[in-house]
Image 1 (spheres, one colour):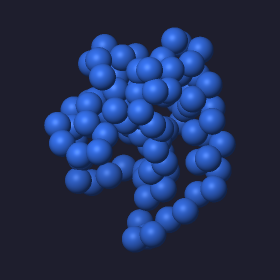
Image 2: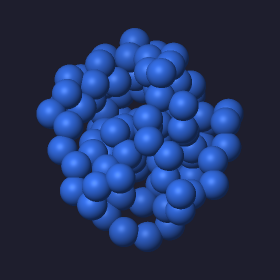
Image 3: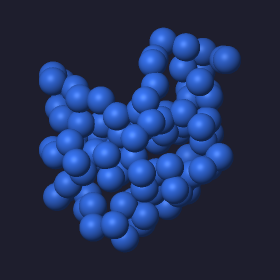
Image 4: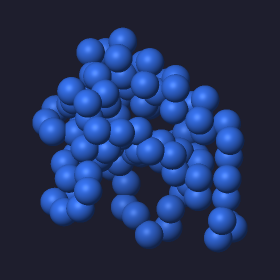
Length: 102
C-alpha cells in the first residue's frame, strides 16, 4: 500500500453514509460529531459517538451501505478532539488493527 493515497470518490461515499445514518435516526451533531474519510484504507469512520449502542447501530448501517468493504470495527477513544465511540469500515486491510464484527 502507498504511504499516501487520495480517493475523491470517498466524498460521495461520505454523503451516502450520512444519508443512511439519518435514515436510521442517527443524526450529525446529535449522535456523532463527524464522518471522516480514511484515504489510506479506502473507508469511512464515524467519530464522536456518545452511546455505545449508537456506535453498534452505526456500524451495522455502514456494513449494509457498503457491503463490498470487508473490514470494520468499533472502539472507544478516551482522549483527543473526538472522544467517544468510533465505527469504521474500509476496503483495504490495516495490518496494525484487530477487527471485530458486530
